[in-house]
Length: 371
Image (tube, rainbow, N blue to C red; front, side, top):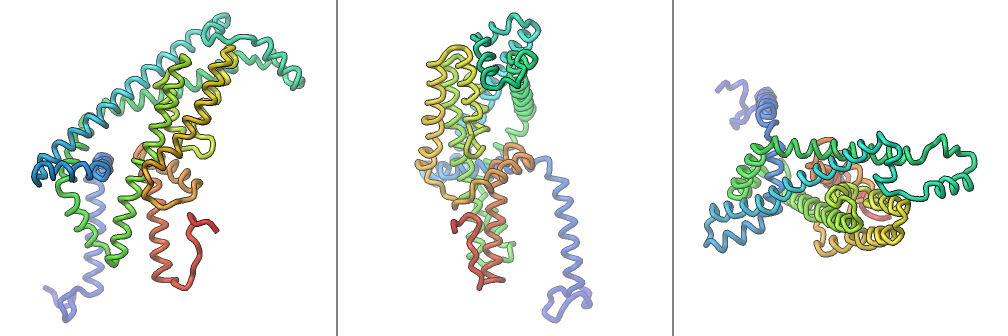
């Protein structure tokens, strides 16, 4: 070894370290090019590993400590409980969205058939009410019927786009699902060993390494078991109520799953307009049912499910969570629901570490703490 690159102790001097860091950066970049096409599958497998690892541990005990058959059974459970239901939901969602879009598109060409599409009644009364309370609005020029139909067409078109894209991605990603299951199998077997190796590379104290490990585990569980379970519960409850009043339950229930992440209003963005449609149809009882069910049952499911699940992660301001989820969705698609809040929590954790190490005399409260 060239002595000019080493110190007396045998470790590299500044030039040698710069060379090593440059090679490391270059190899990491090449590794990114090599693995970037599989990162989504790897990340999904890692999330499933965290969620289903307790089941794997229990199965391993049942199999007398044999980890391989326990991992195989855990993967089979994931297929039955996650993959197959996702495929079926995507297919039903797209089917109902296409049916709604086809119906509205066909009836839009026939103005006389508008009443047959939604069975709306008393448009004259609606127009009279608008004339009485807002005389400056020309309701005849405005044409409330056509505006309402155009709004529904736009919503249904968007739903078709989302559903078709979702189903296309699912159907074209059978190999990806196989890769997820393959990665999950080996994560269950060797994930703990890999995690310890990765932690050993971090130039942090054991306390801070443990803090980061607990952070990742807690926020992944919170995102999947907390946010995901709340959204799924609200979507199911909302879809049931829509099906009972004759609306496409799977379609609007799925929309509610995504709307549940919106603070304050959430699923009301779906069941509120639905109640208005029912009122215009003259179905007052059904409209009241949708409002009561949406406000108390669907809305109350949030608090009930969160209490039952006893969230592990620390409290964070809802506005920060909202923007972290939206940003995560833009960055990583559906995985952003997990990665967005996780990145936010990572920032908060490193800010706490920075404060402990570099500014211990400051005692400013964290963003999630109340003043």
